[in-house]
Length: 183
Image (cartoon, rainbow, N blue to C red):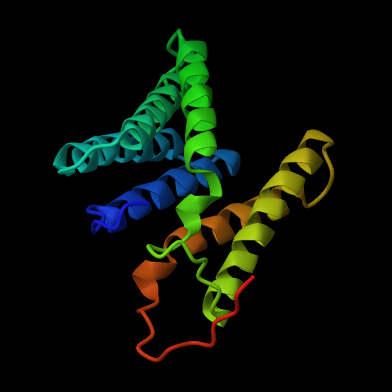
């Protein structure tokens, strides 16, 4: 992760939350869900391209991230619009993801000094993210099996992940130093 201040961080997070909200609306069969998903994918792709162009120093990893986000956004748009060639975009997204994971992987979630942020606040939010991911996974599997309350579990998981993404929008940075735990 570069030490440069990342631009468009908040709009990117908001567009990702819009995308997740659209997916949730689609699962609940609400009106305008497709339009919300399309706007989420389109703004996410557009904002990331603007972010990439405004970077002064571009490394190979930046190009891989650009391919990853661009092809993922295009895959989402093409899938929602039922256009052909979605397999091409999905394949390119998968290749870019594997390359990103090999080159950066979990180091992306470390701070500039390559230390993990393990304050009590971060640990609680990371637990919320893990529980949200487990809710999405188990809710999806239970939905396939047509079990009761699977949609509730899936919705709760998506909501928790959206809250994790937007946590910096609603919760200001603490001025006092939290107790830090090193894992």
